[in-house]
Amino acid sequence: MEPAPLASVRVVEISHMIMGPSCGMFLALLGADVIKVEPPRGDKTRHLTGMGEPFFALFNRGKRSLALDLQSDAGQQALHRLLATADVLVENFREPTLAAMGIEHDALRERYPRLIVASHKGFLSGPYEDRPAMDEVVQMMTGLAYMTGPTGRPLRMGSSGNDIMGGLQGAFAVLASLLDRERTGIGRTVRVGLFENCLMLVAQHMVQYELSGTRPPPMPERDFSWPVYDIFETADKRAIFVGAITNGHWQSLCRLLDLPELLEEARLSTTMERIEARARVLPMITERIAARRYETLAAQLERGGLPFAAINEPADMLDDPHVNRPGGLQTSRNANGKPFRAPSLPFEFSDGALPAKLDVPGVGADSEAVLAELGYSAGEIAALTRTVPDLQQGKANAS
Image (cartoon, rainbow, N blue to C red):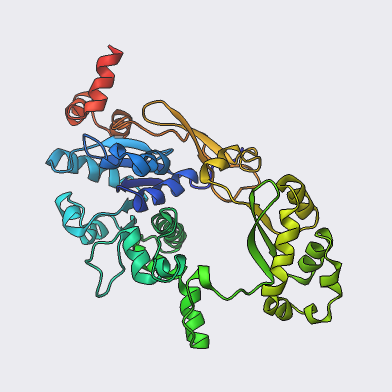
């Protein structure tokens, strides 16, 4: 197997929560050596519970953990020795916090001209650049929440989609900067905006208004652009989404539901006529679907080449046969040793080049190895790591 695409790239990540760590995760999944620099007691994201419990494990797979006290001179010196070996720095802290760590952007640019800095912020440069932002904040600001819920009930999307996509935008910009550095020999600083990422997600609605002058209604109340694009209930009380978009879809659906009269009706010969007749036609389709069991209908829809889907919960995906194809899920071990499965990247290489080790490091688990790579002596390493509780506990258990 060929080496992973970014096997020769070293990334230093100083970030927390989701946006910055997801950028590091995407780069790690592509094979980069991602070294996560954490405080001696670990990234606070490690200790979240409830819906926040998976954040650290999921977005820090495949990284190495270096625990440093960046409030101390020794910790900052070690960080700079590490940065001198790095290709990329990923961060998502406010400028005063970075300054307290000794890594202001201007100083980094002067000291490490080849370093690429991926800076994940709430907003790009402009009137809002100093505002704090969270996923929910930008969904409300941009209109994404308005478009997701019904009128009067703005609703955030059902995942941390903006944070994750913001990290993906950061990884995308890093790859472009690495290519550009091959040409120029110089790195660059990239600022990634959570708000601007969300703006891209609602761009279709913005452009609809630009082109038509019409303010689009929330998606639950939208005008349908297709004859059939709906959720139905089967005979065994299972919900199923069915779409019939093309003329071929329409013909297949009418045939498999035994509705030849719809095919013969002259008033339903075009897509627009079928859309205009939805109020009259959908009850007929609903009745025929309600008479068939889910498994029977799903097999017929698949044979007919029609878009369809069960209405699943995310947990159902862990048992889905397609998700469980070779390479679909990757198994990692959490820092406490508990195994968990998570999706692979949403693309595949012809040679299957992906990193094999995607475990989640304990706090400072790789401190000694990384510091040794930087030329620190055993005594110096001991001095730098003596404030890391997890590391010291591990040594005590080993002895």
